[in-house]
Image (cartoon, rainbow, N blue to C red; front, side, top):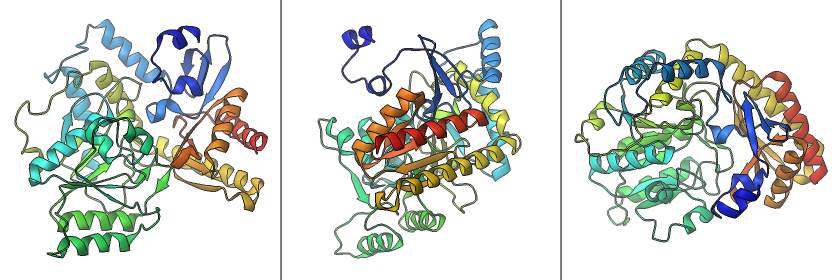
Length: 416
């Protein structure tokens, strides 16, 4: 680690949590340069839904490279981009009756959110956007303005403006009534509030503490957005692409968003890709070249992403995700019970994103460190870093899942 400590910026973060040098990885395991294997319950912060070095995707990428495929294309048309678009439309959009346009921008989720904000403001002619407490939407200034975390916001150095913050459903003061109160203020000519350009929401707040919104509350947000002429934007960046047991986390909820922000798992292999799904009538407001990005035409990402979509041609993978998700939740509930009711541990999540709220950031930090020492990569999130977040690859073998859950159990007991 000496090279990193001497030469790499002080801003490095994950390498402090996992202080070893990794040399190889396969599915749900990473191996360091000393040959020690770690079960990975972190999966690149949700990027590696299909595991490290997925063999099907790797073969497709190798074939692409050997054929001198177009690795970088800006937004020019390529065969690999066409293959990805056709596969996404056939596998994801058509079965859901969706007619969204696909917009590719810069390579990260934050870029997707920034593009959504620009478009919402263009479409409506309004400036302010509604975001929710405990939300996380990115680190660039627009997406950071939506993000609630004080630590991240403090690094901006400039005011983060043009955002109205409402409580998330599970936050203090949240729920249907809070939406009704905001609606009433907007309707009151003396309320002092201008109607917003958009409502931006996560169905599951991943970085915010694995906070899960209900379908009725999300429908109420959507209805409010429609009634006041704002766009309804769902940020699917960490919980989409199969993570919750369906391709979209909002499947089956009666939601019809104006914009869906995707990144992380959409590329699948760890190569960068971000994409917004946009209703055609809103997409028509863009002028050619009005929003660009140097790395919006990543050939390797299109190849890997197209192969990733083959996992969603049937329900086999998603059935496994739902079953594994229940195993994870059951193990966490048992762990909370073992810790004792007086500890107040709480379990929440959907599918294969599960959180154990231990109520104390220092305890969670100790569990993360002890887990690493025992051979498990797991991270903390939420207010004060008090929630242990489990997001292993969806393809994790049963034995690795069981081993990781047992290591976590031991680490929690050791840290109490």
